[in-house]
Image: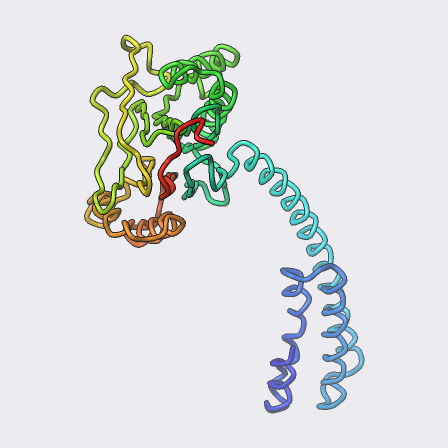
Length: 348
């Protein structure tokens, strides 16, 4: 409006820029409230009349016609603003509910469990979503900490559904499963039961790769069970190596394709050591030449970085490396053992 008034005052009388004021209420409807849109329309009518009086111009009949036009556009714009505002309110309510549901299904991990710190990077591929096909959970049970990180085959709501089933199965069985093989079997059973309950569900057709970690209290060791998942990276001092499974298990929901067997890897995990769990959204990010992201090489650069900074550094590096952005779910969980040595049970 300011620009139109100034332009109208400095241009010749034959150039009536003030006619552009009819667009004001229509533009206001895009962002202003109903009352604000009406106010902008009335202000445009006032400015139009004042400019005609100051500069002279059309007669009363023409002025009345132009004012009526602005008034009509203002009324229509107010209705558009009301519809937009209602849709925005409904969307805000739905988004708030979805946000709560997503936080309940995939809640952030606690920053500390027992003798370890947990630092998470999680990015869902779906725009505006907090949950994708990648999932994680960590719980403190009597005598140990148990951690799960996994990746459901595929994307979309079906992958989210399968992830939520596995999260529920882990939360209900992690406390009483005697060991990691039993826990993996119960996760498989959870998917099978859900598929039987709802055979038309996508969960019946999808598989998931999972890595399970157990950190016993009072011992500087870690136990790992890998069900077809990318090998975690272990940092000991300045050395970074992949924890390869000698005999990895099949992904969950594929156990029926072969004899079920689970082999647990046990390795030293002492004070100051760090273990990075991640999904293939990290390791399979490609640059413009199609080269996979060199995670192990990058991790060696961050051996001296504070643990809480590593997920942020990883996210920034992935975003810069990926050609065309990140198009897959990404999850990475850094497990950092306290630098103080573990105390044996009953030492206090």
